[in-house]
Structures are given as structure tokens and as C-alpha cells.
Amino acid sequence: MNEPILAPHWLTLATPKAAPALATTTVLILGRIWNANGAEHSAGNAALMVVLATGAATAGAFASGGRSGDSVIAGTAFAASGGLALAGVAGYADGISLPLLLWALATAVAYGLAARYWRTDRRETVAHERQTLGRREDHAHVERVEALRAGAQIEVARSGAAYAEQLANALITRATLPGFNPQALTDAGLPELPAAHRKDI
Picture: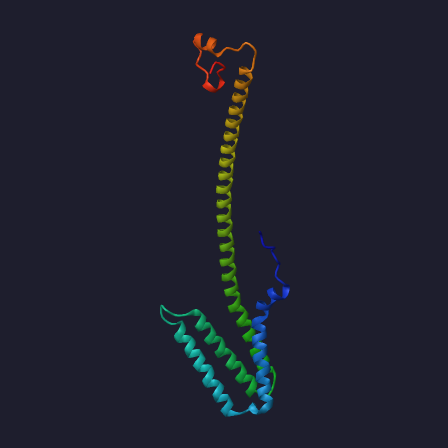
């Protein structure tokens, strides 16, 4: 039984597209909350964010280096580094203009990186759908050929059964005709009838 195909809700489709903006906006809001709670012009807090952002960037550089580099870990580390830098600036600065400028820049970079992954994912999805469609067409072709072959065999069996039935009816009808003498046919050189259809047995 085929499962019904359900179209995804528009919110399900829009959520991944909004994720970069939601992430950078959340970091900006948390940074401004931190600013209002005493991080403004705090050298210790700024130094902490610089150390954390530098550590995350270093981890990303190590993760992406070499032949066995993991792009997922590297991307996560660089995203964390950018988020920490944005949070540090948003927490340290006394105005909103610099944090908003960095928020816009971080959002644009996040969408640029995400668009590359979205394109790759879309290409892989389309390739998988094409491959699946090709396999389905191949299987459907094989099924059609087998159905035609089975139908032909059924028709041959039906025609053979119909011929056998007609032959049996003809023999029965001929045996019931008045004056029918199978021995006379045999004496005339015709093939001998089966014993079941001979009256003299």
C-alpha cells in the first residue's frame, strides 16, 4: 500500500533559511544584555572574549589543516570564533552602531557560507532523485516485460486447453454419431482411435 505524499509545511522549509539570521541576532541580543549588566568598557571581559575567540579560530585552523581535515568541525569552530567576537564587541562597546555593523557583516558571511552548503545539498538531492527515478524506470521496464511474458504464457496455456477441450468434444461427438464404426476407419488405414473412444471395447 502506497503511503500518501505529504507536502512539508512552509515553516519547516523556512526555518533552515532563517537559522543564520537567528543565530547572529541571538548573539547580538545576548551581547547587549551582557553590556547592560556591567560588561561595557570592562577590560577583563573583553580579554576573556578575545582569548575565547582566538582559541576557537585556532581550533578551526587545526581542524581544517592537512589531508584529514574535517570541514564540519572547522566550520563550527570558525562560527564559534565569530560569534564570540561579535558577543565581545556587543558587550564592550558603549553604542549600538558598531555591534549592528558587525551583526550585519556576520549575518552576510553566515548566509554566504550556508548558501554553499545549501547548493551542495540541493545538488546531492537532485542527483539522488535522478538516480532513484532511473532505478524505478529500469524496474518498471523489467516488470512490464515479465508481465507481457507471463501474459503470453497464460494465453498459450489457454489456447492449448481450448484446443484440447475442442478435440475432446469432437471425439465425443463423433463417437455418438449413429453408424460410427471405428474399426472401419482403422481398416481404411486411418490412425487407430484411443481405446476410450472405441465402441467395440
